[in-house]
View 1 (spheres, rainbow, N blue to C red):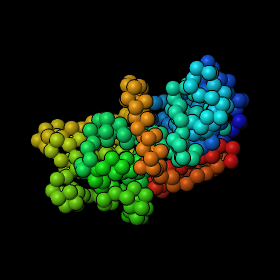
View 2 (view 1 turned 180 degrees about the vertical axis):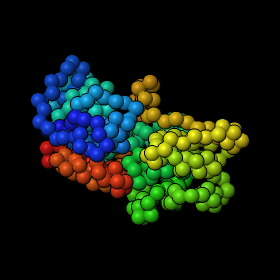
View 3 (view 1 turned 135 degrees about the vertical axis):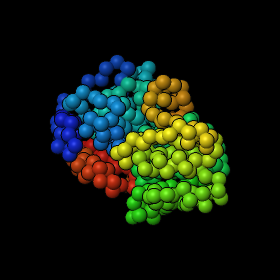
View 4 (view 1 turned 90 degrees about the horizontal axis):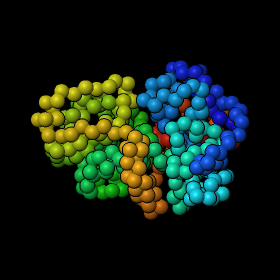
Length: 326
């Protein structure tokens, strides 16, 4: 079978190669899945450089998440041949076949195709964990979402709006504002440049943001500390800007807000019952048509480089989905 392997850690994708691998052998407790679609996440790019907190031993097959059809499973797994499933296991998704533990899979929402299912899991798990589990989102609250052109940012906008929040999306690219407005349908789209607090204050009638969802970090985080309402929460999701910000503790003290660290995958691993509940809620929302993952482009796995380079160059509005075997 074909698989995208990270054979060396480099900063220019030269360590990746599409190779032929033996068919995987399913171990007891695992499910063998034919991958129909697999989505690219920012951690996938970071892992090619050795810059992500999880550092698999080289060589490894890239890819966090996928959707496909069950080819083989233990009867006790809860899955049967032909079932449409979605899931992931940190690595291994960018391949024609994958074996994963049964507890890493869930049914594809009714009415959803494989492409959308592959793009849904990690992004909406992150969004729900940050906004609801840790952020205690309530209808009518203001949510400020940075990095709104990315898969996680768009998911946060989509989910917050579905749950009755008022959403301000930001981007660092003027060219992306219209596409974000169309896909995410927020109450407003701002450029995350300079002093954007005044714009947030005006939009919210002086209230500011009850939750700031920040995958960007750096200067955006610095200014976000000025945008949080009293009693609000600032969720640290990532550092796509490349700079890990620092904060003087007198700022959250005086303004009465909390800074929360968001590692959604780790949260689900430590609290598996909550991870299961989050998957159930997001599946119900998807089946009701209230949330819909945004996809920038679909590509054959043979065109993996285009997807990775588009992500590295910040060209995307939504997720890249690879089609193994296409």
